[in-house]
Image (cartoon, rainbow, N blue to C red):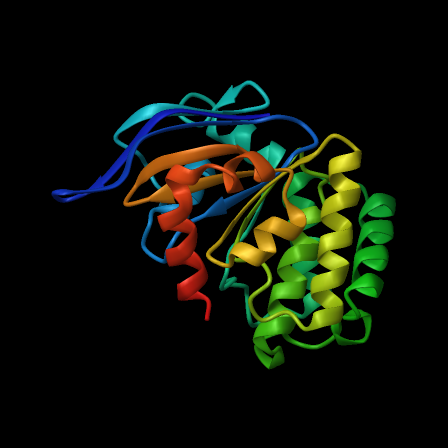
Length: 237
């Protein structure tokens, strides 16, 4: 589903992402773990086509971000940690705008909006302007907008920040359901416990370089990574 090959992204003299290669199969939930500043967000924005990268390639469902960026965007959904939405629109108008962009039919968008809004408990707020939303409400709206076109790859950057416990649980259930349908989920986190609970696989990045990738139990049992896990656990205390 997602293939990253020798990705390099620099900012001046600093390599934010350094020769990173990674593959995620359909149906997998992969946690992207690392300290703040390790290169997680840069990698994610490169996948989504938000950032141009220096070298390497990224493909989603066989489509190259370099050669077919629009085609890739049709296949993915991106939920940032701090979504920038159109505050002058109401929640429902924003969702309909996104559905229009992706060419989602009226019947299908109505069904998906109703279903996800009920599960995230935001139905009664959709008539309000987004400017009046809390951070958590904006996060819920961003989640619905990301799912409205039934993406093949869901990419999330620290997705549980700002969500109340019920909404976080609903999102976890939605992630599992989408993966059972063949979708893949790739999300960043610096909270090790979240990755351990949710992920079939994890990828660990440190100073822009991928230091481990594989099943959680296998990676967790690698003695050479004990220092990194200790640092991550200490950061979350």
